[in-house]
Image (cartoon, rainbow, N blue to C red; front, side):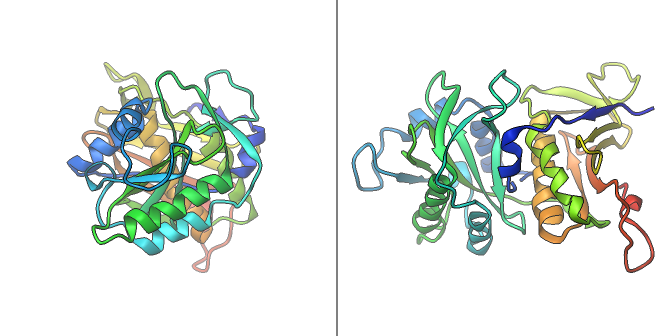
Length: 304
């Protein structure tokens, strides 16, 4: 019998709009390495430079194709920006599952365009930073400036925005992406339940071995089911039969990609393949309220 992990709803979940994942080039791998850490490297690398005019308290950007990808698809970046609510309320942000109040926005937090080719990610900066304060509108403004300064520049590339407002301990990165997602099945109004999984699923950055239950050396047995607290959205993680090394962070990225491209974008379920060092892991998301499809099938048929 497959284990079921029930996701507990939290106050910040309703604000979660969307988010990314997949194979990456060396440059994308370095970007991911930087985004996976505590962002001290980002802070030290970019905090003392002054490519954008203004004083230390002004929103400014640093563009770097080496770290954040080249030639972002501007229309998809704009789509991602449009999914960020122009909300002026100052919210608290912090790493999920670290004992912070449920009212905190859970990090990691990423917004993707509907095509999954461009994303914005909010990141903590500075040594030993555990929390930050900023509004969604400040993140949206940072996204706008990143599009203008970096994506739409002569040397089109990704970048990071610093001093976005609030307590200036939150930065926003613009990155590129190459998803391996296939949309299938269908969702009704219950598609919003998938936000609960997205906002509270594990996103640990420790490497571990995923594989079939009972296999020697397996740290995370598969298959695994994660359900929303209302049982309307189901995330499943599978293995092709081989052991593979990955991180829960990769699973969170894959879930955000499927959510952005399929669930939010087309009200369909989806599958993300090729996860892990060997590419032997895959993830599917589907509705647990069957929806009749034009060919007579249902969303519950979309298992893989």
